[in-house]
Amino acid sequence: MIPLPILPADGADYPPLSALNDLLFCARRCFLHRVEGVWVENVHTTAGTLDHRRVHQTRDTESATGRTARGLWVTSHRLRLTGVCDLVEFRPGAPEVPFPVEYKRGKRRTWDNDEVQLCAQAMCLEEMLGHAIPSGAIFHVKSKRRREIAFTPDLRERTGETAERLHALLAATTTPPPVVHPKCKQCSVRSVCMPDLLTGASAYRRAVADLFRTS
Figure (cartoon, rainbow, N blue to C red):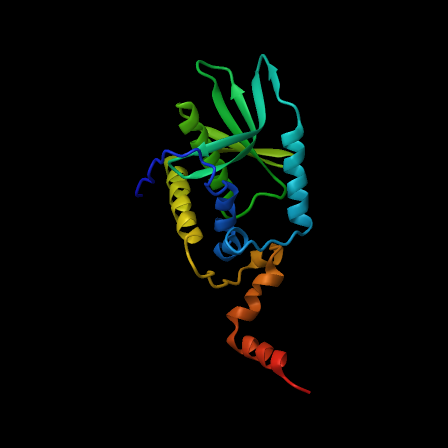
């Protein structure tokens, strides 16, 4: 993996960490959302937004078992990303060991977008604080179960590569073509993306003919 440059910037113009999740879910959706400004809310996206808002608005705590920070802004100049950690537990030690926790609405998925987003948070914290973070966790709101994630060399490499892909995508001038996948059914921008129509040449020709047909 080619290292990303370390830039002397405050991160204000960097894309958000959540864009990594968008990209790994679907490059076309990420481009529509982040470049073309297309976004459609549905029950899943709205519920997720409310879950994150509740976490961020809960007060930080401090006890003998460590302190917590919620809604913590982080930045990495190496990854050229910025964003908000839902929750960071600072576990006692010399120094304290940060343990980022990302809240997700649904159950564990078969793809790795959540793990990469969480790892990127850890890499931001490492760059800002100057010491290693071995693991974090994803908290699944519906099941109220926490799943610990080890930040292995492989996951860190995938995270860096995904950041590179994200910057290339955001600099592109054409929208990626649709790829029909079962997860399209869950996508809030499906009605705008129209993957089934655009990937089927015959269906597309019929739709164009119907659109311009005169009666």
